[in-house]
Image 1 (cartoon, rainbow, N blue to C red):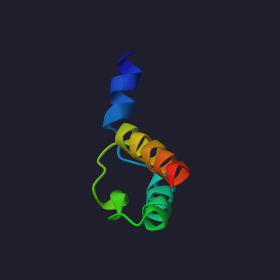
Image 2: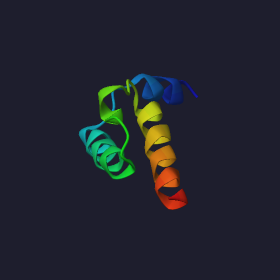
Image 3: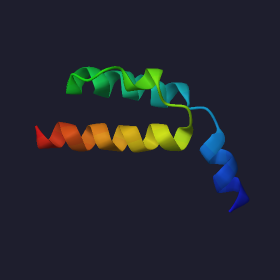
Amino acid sequence: MHYDKVRAMEKPTQEQLAELRKLSREARVPDESEIVTSRDEAERRIRDLKDKRWME
């Protein structure tokens, strides 16, 4: 459990940031990679953007 808390606080990976830039561009929303502060937040936003893409 402690590992999950530590991981949640880690900065997003370069791969996550690149994915967020790509998905933000495709979804025509502001660049989400500029505002995420943790890996978990990046994962949530990636998932949300992918869901949005499927809805359009």
